[in-house]
Each structure stands twice: as structure tokens, then as C-alpha cells.
Image (cartoon, rainbow, N blue to C red; front, side, top):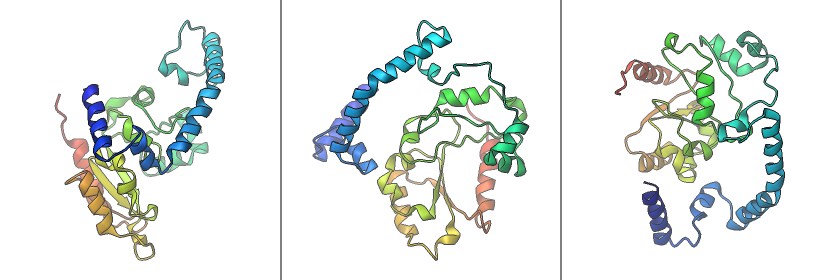
Length: 242
């Protein structure tokens, strides 16, 4: 499987006359190869410092070897826990979720990473009494690059786009739009005031993800929310195979 993906990437580079295997990703990120080379050089230069940090963390934890998931392990696990009631008082998102009727809200610390991964999500799920819930929503980090490369194991993947972001996002960040099961276009009430060409936007989406279901909505005016929530409830009630 890996060899097939590598060969496909090499063929795309050859057909598009790209002279570097990282050029496609650089184009998505709108940066030059020289900038990437400078970043990689800085990372290489700082690697000894990172190695010393993890060597110290390994000793503090009393481990013979650190694994990937140990990067997020607290060094001092006896710190006091924060209850959901306490979290509501300090975390606005949790408070809004509770006010909207959510039974629980778990905050996930990514440890500085630009995305969630399945290991982080599993840690949050272990804090919940799963049989009492009909629907769980995992909100990823809000960028259009990294989350596309890390599957979380969710039943459905949904992308929320926003009119103020611009109509060119499917063309700049194809990876995010290619793999979703549904697309929500929020803040459509701003269309009269922002140069956002909906036809152009949808054309880019359709080229990447043919037939993907799309919900133009406005949380401010409630436009389109009934169709969106009806679909979401239907997905929650749909039995999964396997």
C-alpha cells in the first residue's frame, strides 16, 4: 500500500514537472522550498535540545523507553484534577456546549500539535460513559492542512467552511475537502457583504469530492439549520456495519 502511494506521488510529480517531492505540499501551504529548507535546517540544529528534553522526561517518569504517546504524559501525575463543573467556569466552549444541551464536554490538550490524533481522542473517550450518549462530536484543530493527514476513527468526517474565509479554499487546501462525508458552509448571511462566489467554491469542492452533501447555513439567522441537524440525527441513528 505504501509503495503504491509513493509511486502515485512520484508519477504526479513527473507529470506536473515538479523537481522536488515536497513541492506539492509547499504549494498547498503557499511557501517556497527555500523557506522549507531553512525550517528543516533550524529543526536539525535544535534537535539535540529536543533529545535532551525527552531524555529528562524519560528519567522523571521512570521509564526505560519513551513511546510516541508518552509525549503527552504529564510529568507530575499527582496534579489536582479539574471536574466538568470547574471546567465550565473557565472554558467558554464547554459552557456554550452545556448551555446548548450537551451532556459532557472533554477538552483535549494537543500538546502544541496542530491536529488531533486517534490516541488523543481515545484518552478523551475513556473519560466518558459511552453507552449513555447517542452522538459524540470531536472538534479538531481549526486549520486546513494537518488534520487531513490524521484519521481519528470517527464514523463521519465533516468540514465546516466559512464564507469570510474566501471561496478559494478548496483550491488551496484540496486534502481537507477530498476526504469528508459532508460539508457545512457557515455564515451565508454574510454573502451580500463579502466577495464570495458560491458557484466557484462548489465547483472546486465537486472536483475534489464528487457528490458530497453540502449544507449552506447561518447560525445567526438559523437558515439551513433544520436540514443540517436532520442529517446529523439520521447519521447518529444509522446502524454501522461490522
